[in-house]
Amino acid sequence: MRELLEAVADGSLSPATAEAELMGYVTGDAGRLDAARQQRRGIPEAILAEGKSPEQVVALAETALETTDRALVTRISDRQFDALETSLDETAPDATLERRGSTVRVLSADYEQPSLAATVGIVTAGTVDGPVAAEAEVVCADAGATIDRVDDVGVAALDRTLDQVDRLRDADVLIVAAGREGALPTVIAGLVNTPVIGVPVSSGYGHGGGGEAALAGMLQSCTVLSVVNIDAGFVAGAQAVLIARAIDAGRN
Image 1: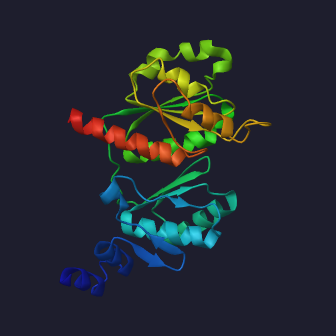
Image 2: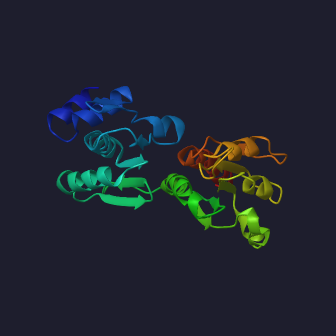
């Protein structure tokens, strides 16, 4: 305790970082950031940008960067991203800003990228599934897993899937995103001995549209797979990371 107080007093430690060390979280005007989640759960807290103002997104991202050396932001809009980029140019000019789809990762100059001896295969049925898959990909890459991205192998032309079977079997864990009737994860799970995480995507229209048919189909799968909620790319990525980390520990 005394060392933390002395570090704050001499300016070598910020009050927010000291609060994170003592409490595990940091409270600011934009909300409370769970700065200790990485140590407690193995997955950092993601900042859900959807429904927040650009100022709130910036404040939370900068708090995460200050206390954990990186920030992970999901469902970010162009307006929010522009505000974050502008603010970081002033407050953290040495930080690295990476964007993939609507998911952003901010890294401080002191951040040490972890590495896992495990490969996560991320599979999409079609182009529309890309943004959800990208969210999962950023989470897995952030944890240091090797990513193998396999796109546009939907069951409407099953040969596309079968052409990739050897590649899919090489992965340690698979995330499979599909909309419409959501058949792809079920088919792939019957072809591999790898854990499969199905992600229903809110594509499709009419009866069962918006991802509902895909979710129901995956839940009713006769092959063994796990299923997350509709468009829940972050959750799928986090689950894959926990599996990949266990595999890495076994190999090392």
